[in-house]
Image (cartoon, rainbow, N blue to C red):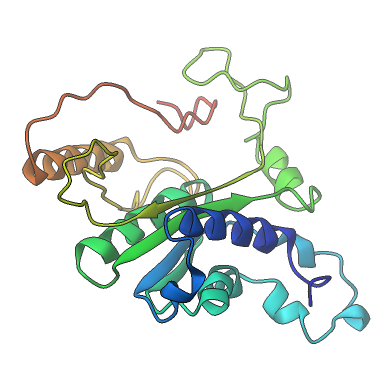
Length: 232
């Protein structure tokens, strides 16, 4: 079974397990807990190129979005919402937004939010993105620059634990707001819609303002596709 496991699943299991046990090291105490997992993924490269004759009984569960999120819940007997989403580049952020909503609405006592992306089959996603003019021929991502000619793909995995704020008053990062939407119709299938994006940002800022005391926007971390089509 381990041999048939997508490396993305292994990495995600490692990181989500670490995020949870760092907060609750007693595994037995977690059994049956209303703790869930929300993760973002965008491809299952590990199955590409595998001849059908070599497919074994564990390849189905070892590769696939649903199993990637469910492994930690199975391992620790967690009973909270478990969801894996694919929204391309925004997958981990959307997963985190769902996790925050589950906790806020009382569907879970805590949620682990994470995401993973490994380039295991460059001939699929990577070459496809290059053919579409998304990746940089010069090998540099120059977001918001007139010389931008695309982005450079990377690999990574992350996980964090979201839970209700305690009453201790101790300083801790707070989830102010999150909103999700779709561009709707735009010039092409992969083109952005500036009006839709502006409305989304405005809605998120309004939600954050209504959620608590006044906050000042200190920094903006942008998507930055490094393309003339995506950055404006």
